[in-house]
Image (cartoon, rainbow, N blue to C red; front, side, top):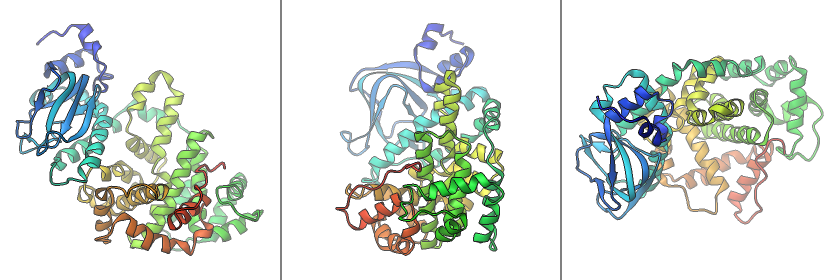
Amino acid sequence: MIIIPSPLLRKYQHPALQGLKEKALTACFNAGGIEVIPEQEWLFKAGDAAVSDILVLEGGAGLYHPQNPADQIVQLLAGDYLPASVLQQDGSYTFNCKATQPLTILQLNLNELGQLDEDTKATLKKNLLPSLTRLLAQMANKASAKPNQTTVNVEGITAFLTARSTPYLGESMLQTMLANLPKLPPYSTKLTSLMNDPKANTRTIVEIARQDPSLTASVLRTVNSAWFGLTHKIKDFQHAVMMLGFTQMQQLLLNTGVQSTMPNTPEFRQLQAHSMMISVLSYEISLCLKAGSAPLLSTLGILHDIGKSVVLLLRRQNPKQDFLLSLLDSDLVGMMLLRVWQIPDNISEALQYQSWPDLLPPDSIPQQHRDNIAVLHLAHCCFERLRNMQAAAPAPGRSRPWLACLGSRDQTLDDFLLHKLIPAINSRAASLPLALQDLIRKAQQPDTAAPASLDMAG
């Protein structure tokens, strides 16, 4: 075994190496080697054997199209990661990579990595996920305009993303942190059970709300806030239920329950307001395309970003562990919390796949979650598009495959949004959140004023 001096082990603070003890760090350095690459020298070219993962320790590099070495796809800096398993087909690289400034890398030989102990491999996978996700998102955005010029190993990405959950589910400290968070109120759990109850109606909502007087007061505050922008004040809960209807009141009550578990600060309110908008759009897209269960998708929309709120809360509660907590995958943390809250599996398990559409095609998602993830992804695409109608249309690769997998073929996102979704929503627009009403109005009349603020305390 090569003995690596301790100062060298600690010199390079790459995210992949965080949390590793000296023995594990030594094993990682022994699994490859540090190499210094002069500026403008190639690390590898398309067709070279892909035998090592690469950690960028210092300097910078660029990933380039194989047919056009001058066309840079991604700029890589210290802390980034180049996984051979993703950038190759049949054992050979499908991209070019060149140092854009003096570069120091750690090459991790794939065969040697396989010999590391399971704890070290699990920590590496967890630490590398944010960098991998960032890399793939940049590649997807760049390559969408030139799909035939870049080839990414879908199987390699899928295997990596699937394996990432293991270190999370076995992490006792994280499990303890989640167990100590505030519990979801009992009425919220009851509301999630209504998804599959065909007999549920507005009377059911009223009966649930009556069990908690403070809940009705909270809902009335929200209904009468700038979030809805009503011209007349609603003083009676029954009136609010009749005005909003079953689905929107269920969304609002469930959202109120989630909010009760988090601090009442602008950053948390912003996350929940976003979730409410995605919930409304997911419900409407489900109805419009006859895809999935609209009530389930409404609930999934409310809960889909709970992991982001939890990571934010844990970082505030544990400032000494802020860096490590910032590396957590919020989708997996959200899945774990919903399991603690005993939310049904068809919601909690779906959360781990919600970021996949930015990186992978529809058939990479397990079939039981595919339609729900497609609708949730399209809700985000539509919301983003509504907020940026003056900008260029989003890359077709982000939305077209997902529209197609739900049966809406040969449509751009704008075609679907302007000619199907908005007309379907317009008959109910008056009861929607004011910010969404304004976004829809702006989409139809691009010269109107800016939309209302996205803050439920407004």
